[in-house]
Length: 374
Image (cartoon, rainbow, N blue to C red; front, top):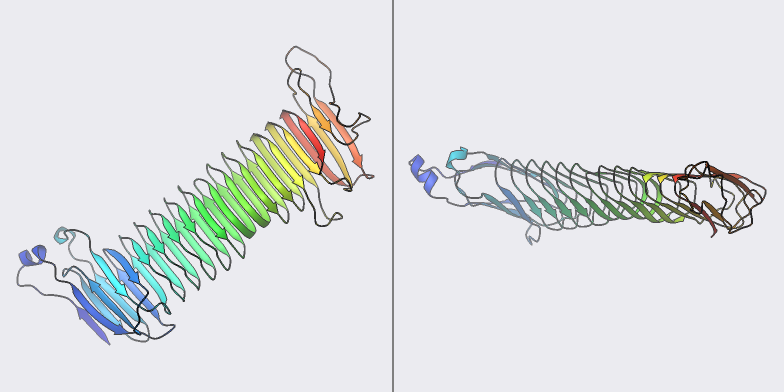
């Protein structure tokens, strides 16, 4: 059944002076989809409806709404002349939560409660706020922030200019914002996160994170590939390989279970190697421009360590190791020649742990290298 809901007034003057609310009710069944196309105004969806029906109200009579009460419920509005609109138009919708949502607000905010089904929420110029979504979620805005609770399935969250905040995700996740932060809880699957500013994820599977300017913090992940133009990269625990690069900032891994490749233009690198499989691929390549490199390795590790300080500062310790390095006693600094009054010559030292094996390359242009027993 299709109905057009509207109010016809005798004159244009009355249309621009008075607003008469539009009311409607349409039955909806479990698992059906509520489809709303709002050319103007904010969408407010209350999902605590106790009836198997959609209650709909718009507080402006200038808006004509076509209602399709089929298997799915569809509400489509026709935009009035912008010159006739005074104040904010709000679509107030009440629905049971055991439905799917497909909402589009052309120029307004979207606010929904908890939903048992899937949710597709899109707006060209507003904020989006959502409760718990048990199904999959696609939440997209061209210029506002996004704040959502937990998502049971896959999640795609995008904003051209706002911050993204989301709870736990039961599947894979894609996060994209050109100018805001990304904050997420525990992600069961893989994550791709591209932010304009900082990225914070509590836990995830494979993580690929890139930001233009800001820190990247991953609490626990199966694998990490992270890059930032200006900020630190940290992880409490990475259970697989790690690749990370920052132009200016520190890199710190509190527990790395597999191989590590990390570089920073200006900053320190600290890696605690804590492998679950001592016989796995545990190579490391750590490169710092201006900064110190510090590694903690288990004493049973089979490794070939190659450490280089390219331009050690005058009077500074260069390479300090708990293991013998080129015949130098453990814990003693390795010194180079002094060709001038500003810098020592490049210092290079090697060591074989337990007969050699995994290649560990440590390099800093200006700083020191420290190798400790884990």
